[in-house]
Length: 202
Image (cartoon, rainbow, N blue to C red; front, side):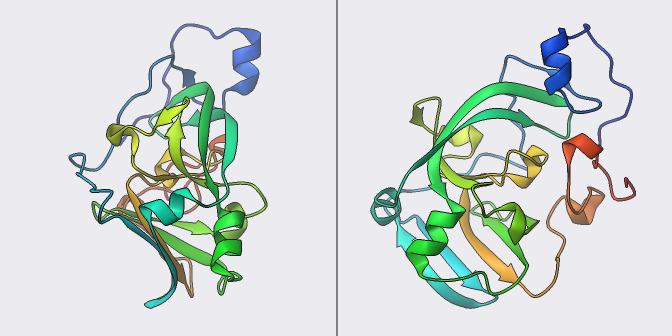
């Protein structure tokens, strides 16, 4: 786990206003994951929306790419304390995904599930209303595998571990079930502006 109290070069006034507590600005795009980058074959890739074990809708890669597209530009913040400004992403908003499925959220929580076995929990309210997307492009190009390609969740207002890489589905859950890092001491919610890094943070 990271430690508190990181200090570095003093940020500009503009940068300081954009940095959540304890963060520093990076111009790189660090690669962090729980294990090796998996190979995801687009010929067999499927994304599934499910209510517990019950599938609600499923898309192949060509079907997913035909869904309405959304572009988002803004800052992202990692729990390891780096922040990257003015990133640009393109993908399918969760609102458009639900509309394509013809489904309303059946519960208040879900788990984002990935091809490498990773998962992370999220309140549905943090994904709808234009707040999140399944991103397939970054900076105008297909999303690189090391950053979660071919598709990753993007929830930019939360710490970036919530934006699960190599996404294969969203599974609605009856309760707020902890995911991979949440079971290992990270906060259930993860708001950068409240510095919710670890379980006991307010």
